[in-house]
Image (cartoon, rainbow, N blue to C red; front, side, top):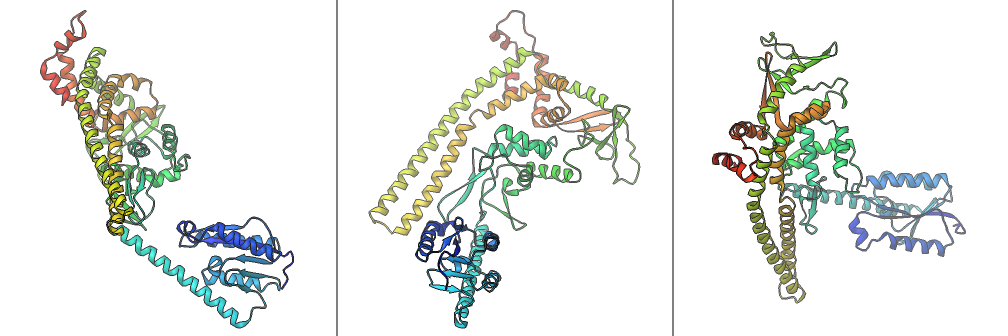
Length: 522
């Protein structure tokens, strides 16, 4: 056997991250094989190949074929490996290795720990040993795969996803007791992503730029690309379910968005799937208006520089009796009137509304402080309990397994309370801000509309209306909850507000009927 300065490569492999961390270190394998090469005066070409792969072996096979290509290209004679199952665990790869060995008399595979060499000179009984060890390794792989699938099935039955959760969630708990909870850092961005897309005003491409702008990043800190955003928008995990191998299962994790919001996003995805992401003709009221006669969506066509809309329900065999051609400008004029109905009369009214909201928020602050105090108290109790079990474990006062189980339970409860506390603190002024924004948006809606682009106008519609109904030349808005609220009480407020000249703010407040204050609080 030639051993002087023969070219060789070192291959190290572990089957999982856990193996790497618990005794089957890649570094330990590399050290063993390098010492073997030095002892036998083998010349190691390139850096040692280090493989960490899942039980499926897909990554290992790809790497394995890359190594063989490198070996053939550089005329390498020797492969150095710790054991047979570190090199191959299936008959197909074993056959490839055997073919390579028989291509040249100098080709050899050295399994150092087993003191076993495969070459053209290997005897029949040694080849039998080689085949048996490959078969054993293959059995180990198949068995490991079965156990993994069994564990995944059990995890799903318990209501938990057996893999990493999507962006917006994080994993807590110890091995064997891991669960998925909302990640308060990224979750608001994911919720915003669904809300924006459900409006129908954002393409995937535009959403990619918008989410990056507001701070959404992948786990590696990179931009989330269009293909990944498309996958996330289809993932039922966000509305409290989980998808595994094309099947959807009930789940125990907390939903990030409502089922209704998720379905709206799916509806937009389905509609967009029939066309390209960017549309050649982008009419202002596309998919926003429906016919009162047949329920069909009003479609728009450009004629001599003007947009005209009419119902175009192909599912109806008979002609729609209310089919009417209406100009885009006629629709805008009617919406302009609506803006006037829901807007505070002037800045003085808006200022008064803001003062009332801020005053009422003081009560919310007290409630929040009480909740923070309660959660801190529970958190302190759980931590004391956890310390108590740690002491019992160290002093061996109680059964070790019982202590570990109780410590795990305390850790999960501690993490849940920490998340709840963080949520209370971080969302403290959301409700107040929402009320302020609603009124300010209504006050400035007309001004915003006049200066906005087509996409910005469509976005404004989505903030105030669910859709519009065309009844001949009349356009009837369907208001969302916020604008419906404004429509009910803003006209009454504007009617009753008659400020006296040169009176201070406090006197102006007294000009309002007490019932108006109650209406605002509602």
